[in-house]
Image (cartoon, rainbow, N blue to C red):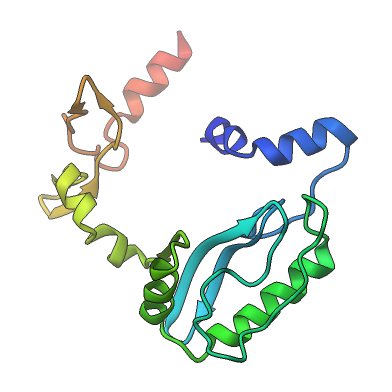
Amino acid sequence: MQGAVLAVSALQTSEYFGNGKDPRKLGSAHPRNAPYQAFRAKDGWFAMAAGTQSCGCPPPAPPAGPNWPRIRASPIPRCAPPIRMICAALLEEAFAGRTVEEMLTAFRAAGVPCAPINSTSQALSDIQVEHMGWVQPLTLPNGVETRTFASPVRIDGASLPITRPPPALGQHGEEIVKELKR
């Protein structure tokens, strides 16, 4: 998992290797483009990726009406933190009175990439999860039936099967201790 996180952090690792300093923590925000992050709406959260190399703010669609905030674009490819923070604050204010669905509808109509930020229950009930067969039944050592999230990795198009139930507490303790003493 650590390798995967570092691999998708190419901008941050490049910045560190280039100047020897840890990059500023930005939460969900993109390090070079804005607005390109998670935002709060009236009834939940969504993410949008409207940022460009010119750091244009706001995104192309004016979902908040004629008073949609405007900020002059930065001429440099890297958004200055004050511009990024002002832009995010103005957008959050504009989004606060709208639902996630209203925001997604407006941004999708304008061609702006966006998506809801789901709760765990919403993510698990997504049609993609069902289609991929990622949620599988599982019998616990005490006989209780439950479900688990199977490996999403596919090899030659096939999912990796769950071949054994989880062990009971201490079930393999003696075996492990014997193995360690060798």
